[in-house]
Image (tube, rainbow, N blue to C red; front, side, top):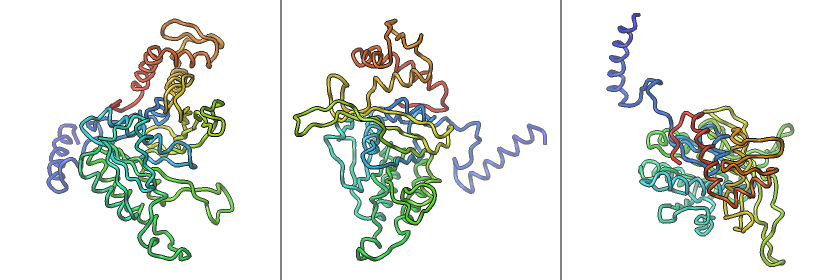
Amino acid sequence: MPKDAMETALEKFETTFAKTFGEGILRRASQMPPYDVISTGAPTLDYAMGSGGYIRGRLTEMWGLASTGKTTMTLIGMAEAQKSIPDRMVALLDVEKTYDRDWAVAHGVDPTRLVVVTPTTAEDTADQMKSLIESDLFSTIALDSIGAMLPAKEAEKDAGDAVVGAGAKVVTRMVKIATNLATQHHVAILLINQVRAAIGSFVGPDTTKGGGFALQHCTTHVLKHRRTKETPKFVGPKVYQVQVGHQIAVNVEKNKVAPPKRTAYLWMFNQATEEYGPVGIDKATDTFSLAKQLDLLQRSGPNYTLPDTTKHNGEAKVIAYLREHPEVRDILRTQALERVADTLNTESVQ
């Protein structure tokens, strides 16, 4: 068929298709816009995800052992959403009932633009998720956590009664609905999950995660968190000393927009100190790590040259200098983000 005839036939088909199924259902791939993203707050993780952050209209799952930064990274992501999309709010489905206002504020969250919902049952969680998405009020909706969702059938039974698969069925329904609605309403969905014992498994890993297989298939990114190192520094009185922070590794286990299996290593601080800086992700280490990956630093052996032409021997001294000179760090961070943006098919809203 000649090209002109093909174009005419296709336009006619598009018109008929739209009348039957609705406007916007059928689109030519060449005319589809790049997706919008919300930064995770860590440029190294944005780069590892291959998207520049959490994609609006898609689902992202974070899972791992307890105290590996899942909730904290979610709060940081919601703070980024508040800054970059001022005409929408963010919402947290706090299934675990563990939201802490002070901890959220410490990581940049504006509590006046955050809605916290506390569901009772898994069914309530699914219905409330649907309602939040359809409201068109939120840029990001987070659920903490899938592992804590309690199906009504399970709540009504005695402790010793078996209720097989009830939770997975509700999660399956929820993620299928969220997958369709998130795209229509341009919402980033962040789902926190937990580690469970793989009962009856005699080969392979002895741990797994809850939620069933639909969750694994409907997500664009699956991020696995684990702790790797601890800071040597403690603060506070001897009896009540608190460790300043720790390093986490976030492995992109699944990725539908870029190659999977990349890993970002992030230092996170629980206490603000003069040596390491404020609470949250260590921006100096994160910026240096990304700049090094992108070959933005002039290097001769162990010596590095920074944008202000100063030279430093060893990575530790470079990071210390970036902490002391945030203006140099910000220049390097901007250069890194510009380089990353050139490689991504996205419209970043950082």
